[in-house]
Each structure stands twice: as structure tokens, then as C-alpha cells.
Amino acid sequence: MNLMMLLEMAVSGFPDRVAVKCGDSTFSYSQLFELARSRATELRAGGARHVALLDVSSPAVPAALFASAWAGLPFVPLNYRLTGGELDSLLAQVRPCLLVTDEQRADALGGSEGIELCERESFLVPGAAGAATEADWSMDGDDIAILLFTSGTTGAPKAAVLRHKHLVSYILGSVEFGASAEDDAALVCVPPYHIAGMAAIMSSVYSGRRIVQLANFSAAAWLKLAREESVTHAFVVPTMLARIVDELADELEGGQDAALPSLRALSYGGGKMPQSVIEKAMAMFPDTDFTNAYGLTETSSTISVLGPGDHRAAMASDDPALRRRIVSVGRALPSVEVQIRDEEGCVLAPGKSGEIYVSGEQVSGEYLGRGSLLGSDGWFPTRDGGYMDEDGYIFVEGRIDDVIVRGGENLSPGEIEDRLLEHPDVADCAVVGIPSEQWGEAVAAAVVRRKGGGVEAGELREWVKSAMRSSRAPERIDFVDELPYNETGKLLRRKVKAAMVGGRS
Image (cartoon, rainbow, N blue to C red; front, side, top):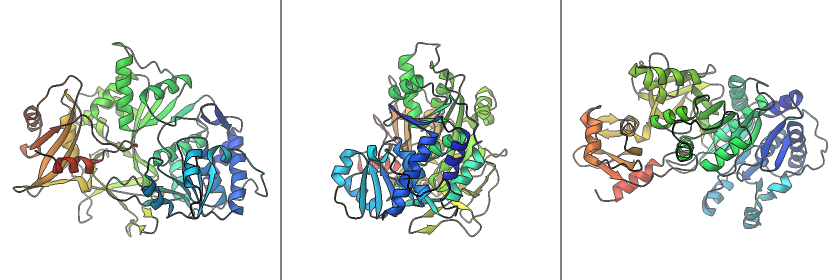
């Protein structure tokens, strides 16, 4: 297995289709193939052992991805928002490398030992094809395809190892080859160092879809580009969708939809989706199919989906249990298995909360220099807590490390947040545990009021108590202007906790 198989099949099926468009730059599938060929030849002749990319979304992303696969080198997309010291620590792990970046970064990094610099625009100019043939890449599925550094929301970033067999297995198990029409277009706005960004490229290439790249996300820019390019498919993280909904609320008059008739499918994932946001989005995009895709970097992207039919069934149901499925992450893909286990590793019954475990060919669970976290039985502990209902729908409650232990009782921040978000005056919230002499940990919440909302702490405590046990009601509530998220939409809960522990009650 090799990722180049995906591009080779696309070239054989639709060579003249536009593969990627970013601003005024376009590359057909055959042009992308030839660019990968020439760059792979040069990489083989050089001394690099990795191909790193420090850049926003551009045609250099798929070009470097496939050139790396052809040359047999790991591709390493890096977070362009990192500080100099943070970036140095990551680059130290992948030297010697070819680093593709913009002109300004290239000037700043000039002379760094073990780093061969190549400016983006130069990288996108094909060189001589050399001796490479059309299929001389390695087919060893155990070769490393991509190294993705985790976001570091709970510690220092570490490099997840994704081998060709993991990624190709994911694509073959979830995407139909050539299924896209010639005018289909996928808007990619997730950064290339996020697993969803990599998955969007691979799945679009295999299906034959045009990739439309948005380098820097804003709701207004996203809507403008989606309309101009008649985008049919898109993926966003929850914070992006929330901003798109807010932008549309200001833009539209009552009763109108989003004026995006071409948008047939909108997928989301990478974080917790507030129920109010997805409900508003479905009302604004009434003809769009919504899909919640849940996965991790270590699982080569998606392992479960809540599909369009599930969304519509949940929204139309008066049954509370069925309605609640709108905040689930759906059911496992046919190619993977999911279990909920307790602290002793025993599989739990439906409805019981524990840790989410996953098994399948696409699951890596491996980190560079740290080995694999896969158990002897082949199962990967995700460190996500949750439960599964009797029909196999998975509900993610948050990271296991975020569980609040109050007086010996384990409390899930996620379920408390869900209740708070049901209040009409709450726009966003984060629940954390803070030290308590009496209980060990106490429940605390940082709350963002909705514009014009005037809800107070006492009312929110009663709101939680009215639907849950009193132990779940936050003992402390701080009202804030906004919550800290990283650029891929993950809540930085440790920052919320640090602010509350360090601040005054």
C-alpha cells in the first residue's frame, strides 16, 4: 500500500479534472502527478530523510504529500502558528529534512543545520522528471507516510506515526473511487497539520473532487469562497460552524436560508458541537446533508459517523432518547470496532460510561520514539470518555483526564456543559474541576453569555439542578467574554482551569 495509489488511480480515471485550486493557482490531476514525480526524483537524490511543510493551505500541501510518498519519505506538516522555540523542538525530531515554507519563514530559518529550505513557489515549479517511472514507489504498507504532531492541549506535542497501510485502509473503507461529478468541489479550510486536513486531501483525490483551499479561515471569507466556487462539500470544526452561523444570522433576514444551493454535504468534527449550533445550521442549510465525523490523529481520522439520516431523524423525533442522538458521534465505521471499557479493561454494557477503545486496520496508536499504545489485543485506548447506547450510537463525554472527581463521584464535564448550553442566554461554556477542601474537587464553569443575555450564576445553578443531580451544579461560575480554543477548534480546558484556580472566586 502507498498513498500514491490514490493519485495514480485519479490520474487514470480523470487526468484533466482540476485537482486543486487556491486563489489563481490550479493544478489538474495529471499536473499534480507530474509535479509529485519530479519532486520525488529530486528528493531521492538529496540527503533529506523527511519532508516538512510549514505553510498555510496551498497546492504545495498535496504536492509535498504525494512527492513524499513517491520518494519513500515521511511527510511532516508543521503548525505555522508555533513560536520559534516550539518550532525548533519539532524540527529537531525530523532533521535532516527538506522544509517547504513561505519566503518570509525561509529567510528567518536560513542557515539552520540539517534543514534544506525550499520556498513554496519554487516547490510548485516542476523540475526534470529524471529516471522515476510511473509506479516505482514502495508498496510496503509499513513505511511511514505522515508524522503529525498532536496539538499539545494536555502536554508537549508528540509525533503520531501514520503508516501507508493505516491511511490507505481508511480511504478504501470510507470513500468510493471516482464517486464525485466533474463539478464537485470540496472547500478545505482546516490547517494541513490537522488530520482532517490530510484526510480531506486524500478523500477528495480518490473520489475525484476538486479541492478548493482557503488559507486563513473567517466566516465571511468561507461563505464568499463557497458561493464563488459553487462548493458542494466542506468540512469544518465546531467553532468554525458557530462563526458561520453567527455571520449568517447577521447577513440574513428572517425566514431565509444560507443562499448556498450548491452545498450538498457539510461534515464537522474535531471538537464538541453544541446542540444549539447544529440545530441552527440545519435550519439555515435545509437542503444540506450534515455528518458528524469523530476520530483522532492516531486513528487516521474518522472512526464513527452520525450521518445525514441520523441528523434528520433526531431533529424530527419527539422521543428524548432519539432526539439526544443529535449530540452523539454516531456509529462506528464498518472497518473499525469500538468498545467502552472500565478502568480494569472490562467491556461495559450500553449506557455505562467508560473509556472509548477502537480497533481496526486504520488505527495506528504509535508515536515517534515512544512506541505503540496498542494493547496486545490490538485495541487502542483513545483517552476519550463516553458511552454507547443500545443501538451503537457513541456519545463522547470528554477526555478521561478531564473527569471531575467530587467526593469520590466521577462527574463528566461534557454532560454539565450540555445542560448549560441548553439555556437560551448561554452562548458557550467550559466546565472544569477546581481544588476543594471539602470534596477534593469542585465543579466550576466559565460561561460566555449570549449577546443581550443577562443570566446570573444562581439561575444557572438552578437550571442545572432542575435536570441533573445537585452535585453536578457548578459551585463557582465565572462569566467571560470568550473561551480559549486552539486554531483547530479544541477547547484549551487547562487554560480555563488555570485561570479559575489562579483567579478569585
